[in-house]
Length: 106
Image 1 (tube, rainbow, N blue to C red):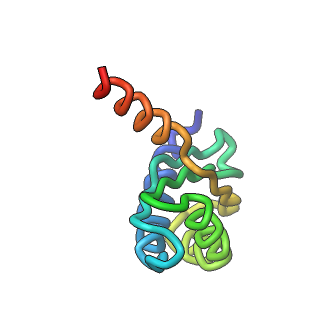
Image 2 (spheres, one colour):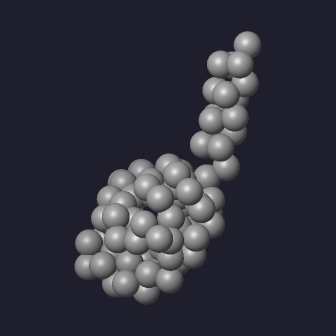
């Protein structure tokens, strides 16, 4: 893995988090960026999004802002090519919540 991948993932995470604040409450509840994984060749960034309510709607909203994010990343990153952004619903967080609920019911 490139030593730059974690650094770039951090920059992407903070930029996407700033834009996640703009998600209207009518679209989704509180939105957070659970994880950002950048490929070894720095060509893709997988962004995992979790939300209190309607995670899919939050992912759609953020995906609609991709071009803006890539422009801002181009200015912030010193790389030849800005990674393509791919948004996903964070299912790991849902699994943890379900496990937590099961453990509390014991």
